[in-house]
Image (cartoon, rainbow, N blue to C red; front, top):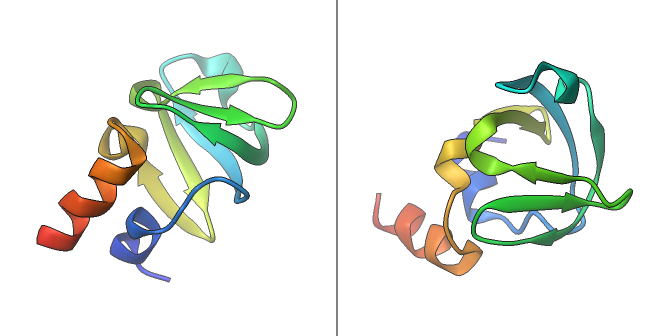
Length: 82
């Protein structure tokens, strides 16, 4: 799967893993995304990850969380234009 495909996809229901973070205690955290807001990804265990502070792996693709900041529906529109 390519980066553009991942960015166009819905994150709710996907398993993710934090592979880098400005908060080193988050590196290695993984779980299923149960909610997404403009600034956060919420995991099933209740953890809220700030998108701007993490790099995640989803479906074997590395994604800089800064590319995810914003409302999910706006991200989908933005990726389609590229």
